[in-house]
Length: 136
Ligand code: SF4
Ligand code: SF4
Image 1 (cartoon, protein in one colour):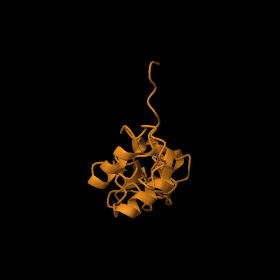
Image 2 (image 1 turned 90 degrees about the vertical axis):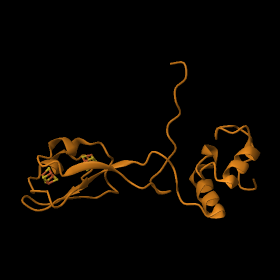
Image 3 (image 1 turned 60 degrees about the horizontal axis):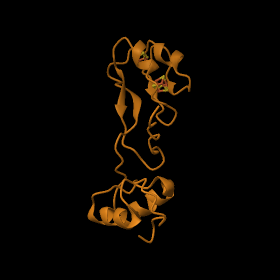
Image 4 (image 1 turned 60 degrees about the vertical axis):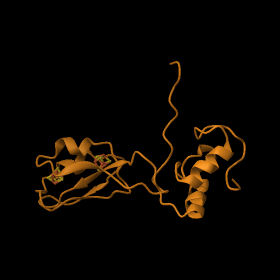
């Protein structure tokens, strides 16, 4: 309760910060429950409670199964962020810190060794989902 903002906005889905704190301590809510608190609060709650980053919806990023890559180099030409490294006829690799998960490269890989796979979220890679539009 000391860490939460205390404004009782309800964005966490609980009627107020007190109920959210109860759910956190009971293990029924993740440290990422409070959007106004931002990532700093999520980190602080996780540290205080001894909990790991446990957000749902892990991001999908490209990964290459090196045993199947034939080095055709089709994928790298499509990547807008230059996340794919490799020379023709050499095994390629994806720099995951540069990959946006757009999936363009997956479609051109002839051996299907390039796939989008879920990545374990970290406090540096995760953010809250965009709010749902109501009545639009
Ligand atoms: S998914 Fe998109 S950003 Fe990631 S490596 Fe493939 S083309 Fe590049
Ligand atoms: S398109 Fe597939 S096979 Fe070709 S270089 Fe990229 S990952 Fe390797």
